[in-house]
Length: 154
Image (tube, rainbow, N blue to C red; front, top):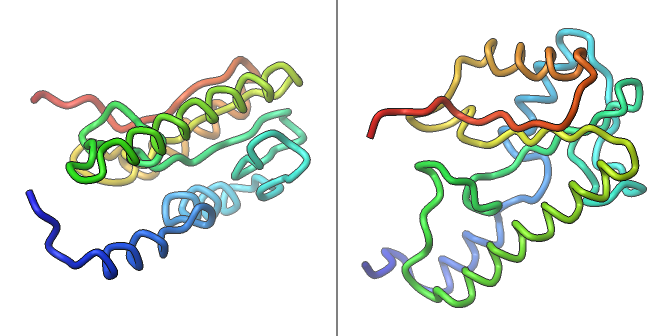
């Protein structure tokens, strides 16, 4: 399928996509702050500059876009054009994510990956459920985890 916009427009659109302060990240931050959690943002002293850092709980939260970080859900689809470029880009992101998570865990941090599909699309979870699960994870004090949209019947 050919693109519906010209290359210059597509380039401008793609370059406007933010790496931090995304809509899902802002949602998580706002809701956690509302229920009393305090955190640091994008701490440069930690591997990968995690989105939210909770020193009190020795925990970090990364809010990942399903496309950019290769999540196995309905949101992720391999692009049909410039396939080699996108394959290298997306697989590189996923490898870097894995390495940074291992570095954080080796340093004693717990890591929660919150996937975009929690908040978007046909598998999204109710907001209060997502925030409740994040809060439970922060309080429980055990291992790293992921939060993703609910499974659906294909």
